[in-house]
Amino acid sequence: MVAIIKKSHSLSTTLNYNEQKLQQKEAVCILAANYAKDLELLNFYQKLHRLEHQAALNERVKANSVHITLNFHENDKLSKEQLQEISSEYMEKIGFGEQPYLVYEHFDAGHQHAHIVTTNIQSDGTRIDMQNIGRNQSEKARKELEIKYKLVQAESRKQEQKNELTLRQVHAQKVIYGKSQTTRAISNVLDHVLKHYKVTTLPELNAVLKQYNVMADRGKADSVMYQKKGLVYRVINNEGKIVGTPIKASAFYNKPTMKNLEKIFDSNLVQKQALKQKLKTEVGWIFYVRPKINLHEFNQQLKKNSISATLRQNEKGFVYGITFVNHKNGTVMNGSELGKEYSAKAILEKCGLDQNLKLIQKIDLLNRDEHTNPDNDSNANEEKQTQNLNESQEQKDSLSKELARGIERTLDELLRATQMNDYIPYHLREKQQKKLRQRRGLHL
Picture 1 (tube, rainbow, N blue to C red):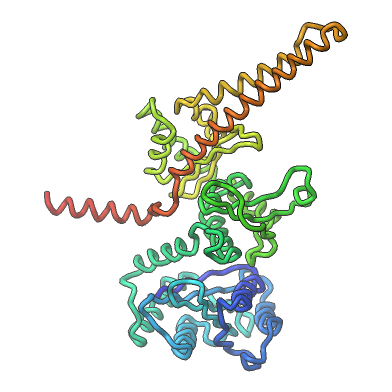
Picture 2 (picture 1 turned 90 degrees about the vertical axis):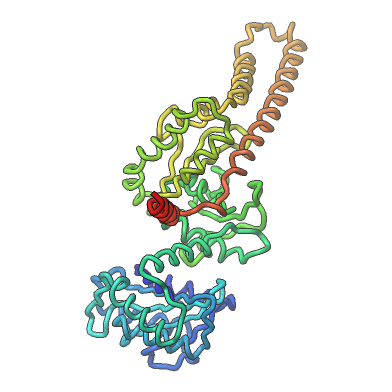
């Protein structure tokens, strides 16, 4: 059994998440402990009011919402009654037995699990001390319950952490349109990405979300949605094309709206800058060791260091930036932030793709020629000027199409090489390497 305890500032958000699962028939509320009414007689507002009323007894505590998940091995097959008993005994053992709490059994994963919603404010207004509760009270309770109910046992605290990491990965899989419930799948991805990646702008967020076939969209700059800071989330396929209908940010339980994202962006700024040099060194080292390298090889070397890269292009297909994502520590940075030599233009040139950039220069040159034509006799040369402009426009259109095709091939190559499915988390890879070193040491 794996127990995960989280605190937050909003009881309504936590409860809303579980109640939405209930409405979607992906969960069922199996227990309402220390409520005045029986579970069958409680509606959403009565469930919430009981928790908020107790939390209001100590307004100085801001993080008064507690969300606990009890995750069981796939071989554990528990009845509703057993799940109720285990949940009640667990809450008693960690010091929450007298608290009002609700237990929901969820059916949206391959393993049986329960979510518990409660508050850490007691009836006398004091706060339950949750310092090291996971390592002390929860760990002890877990072991006792595993023995009593003959559950599959976690080997150690490290194993529990590994399981927790695995659970996060399972929930944050690529979204495949038509094969998964869209809102839930996007919500799982957002939970994972916003927690583990230090994004500071929407393009940076999208650089990570696209690894999961998700995109955050504000609309065009002159649209009403953009001007009012609206935001929708879309599913994209493996080719980057939009599929399905957009979902408003406000429709998700964790409310990943533009207003809330901006708060997260601001809080990530300091952490991000502290990790800038490490990312810069790892990317720069690849070109230092292999000065002549193509884009595919470059991307493979990035992948070995758990780094992925995404090119950014405008509606006409022009590349205007590159974003690096370090999956080990969650750093997300534009190439220009690392330095001029890490910009999209510099990277493409180093990878032997300067021909695309020369096409851009040719188009720019044609644009300049239109505006610097020395012939001012409009009457005498009107027909000639019209012919020249038409030829110039045709040439520009041809070059633009050629550039777009080249960029599309470049993007396909880059994105195809960056897949999250076989990415091994840093913590697990370090453990594997440590075991390998130990085995080698035994044979010396």
